[in-house]
Length: 161
Image 1: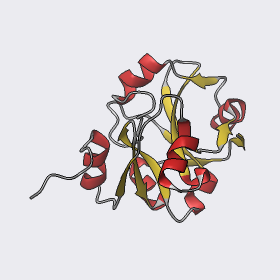
Image 2: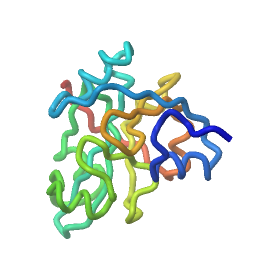
Image 3: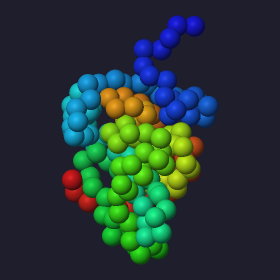
């Protein structure tokens, strides 16, 4: 069997293990380029490029939110919706410890620690999403139905980018 021309990350192993069809996409990673850069590199709408954001609540417990690339998360609305007092972005070192991924290459698939995953409800309506494959400069195209393997809970916490 020939070697794939994309990285075989923990996320890719998770997708294969859960029989989630994916299409790999490599692009030149740019520090702080964000979803605008990856969307432009792949020629896809930024709305379909999904960010994996690692957050923590007031008890310092981690959680992941999947959000459209062109939207932001209202942490206030998220805390309210989840019945928590306070939610804020996790420190990058802590996020790396929980997920095993570097910031800019964080995938919700195959994280070191199983964290609760929340998905912006409208992501589930898209025909295809582009989400991090576990390495900077590497996205995978999947059907939003593939997020079911994460037991992702839908939320409505998007604000305009």
